Length: 278
Image (tube, one colour):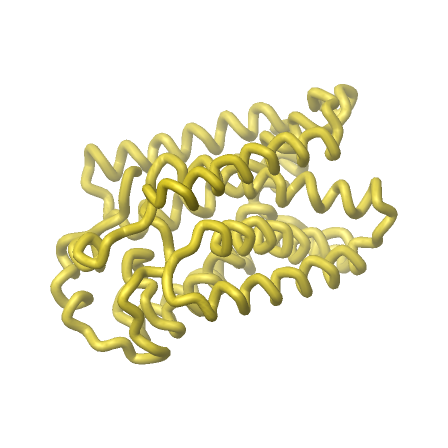
């Protein structure tokens, strides 16, 4: 999906006055291009492998990793919230770290507390639905093309956090508890994403919901790819290890973020943001 828009509610959103936070001239989220989805999937992969790397190879407990990553996320999120426009070098580190924290939320519930994956998946889906309902009732839009107030941005990052937690739980449920394996799980989630894209372009499925559905599904897709590459061959993986896999994907992410920061090809102009707003 090249961009996310919904013409039926565009006028009301463009004319609306923000109900919370300061109104900004620029949108705080990049245009949804192919670069957006590539980096997003790569961030989800790193989120999966980084947790395994820090938990197993670095000798940190799951609790220790959670505290460390949450503190780092808090720092970069404060920086992001204080910016007045989208900056690739600030935005994407938040996504990468929030993918790690979202993974840790799900892993802590499963490994430390013993919550069944089916239960955590259902709970995260309900929490995410509540976030969307409250967000829409307050702002009258769920579009990422109207993230131009501190209130809307706060809802956006809260939703992103729980999409990662939900995607982690759902991905583990399919690949591990249902015993699909990493590669087959990646294919399965890829097919579902393709079906949503087809429904959007061919059947006029609402763009906002298409975006958020795919945003959730790219989390287990990336995690399945990450596990497939990093896990030992005896466990159904390729055996590259978490160090090599994490370094490989981080290098690609860094290269793409630098490219976007220099070319600014993913920055929406004010008139484009208004036209695409919902």
